[in-house]
Image (tube, rainbow over all chains, first blue to last red; front, side, top):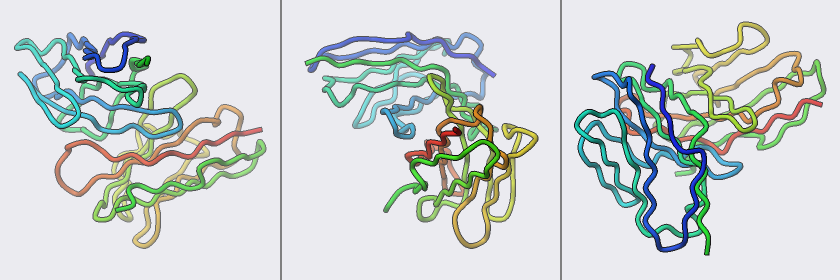
Length: 111
Length: 114
């Protein structure tokens, strides 16, 4: 299973763009990349998922280079309510339910 | 749509007692997954169930833990003879029969063993 490495924590200010990079050097051909957000005392919430290049939804963008050994979650114009833990997951296509959550990145958005 | 409902939100048990955690999946979802989160750690997969079937229990401790998802009613995670190390947040997620575009998690049950 591909291991992921991401920053332990990041600080930002309201209105800024935040980019959280995750490395997954031994990602397999059939793995895809998923990001979840978790607030204190709540379950994780799915943000975005991709296989390669760029994916965008109403919440975030996900950039995946051609070698797929890393990915970057981009949050445009963060607000205080974006303060949370963000998890990068590499998910095997054939056992997508076995999500492996690491320690995540604790994002603190300041006024 | 009420989402994935878990109850109770908080559960306190003395060592040796039984804990029963309930999970009602989202409407239309027939697949349920249980995860455990220890303090300051990420979630760890425990078990995957469909109605009346355990599909994958590779993450379940071999003893004292069991899970079911009956034809009617919520999924139940049961922990017998709880110990202090069972204190954690237990999350349930659900998904529809097809597709894997993200899983919907409940708000969890926080189990404290005293």
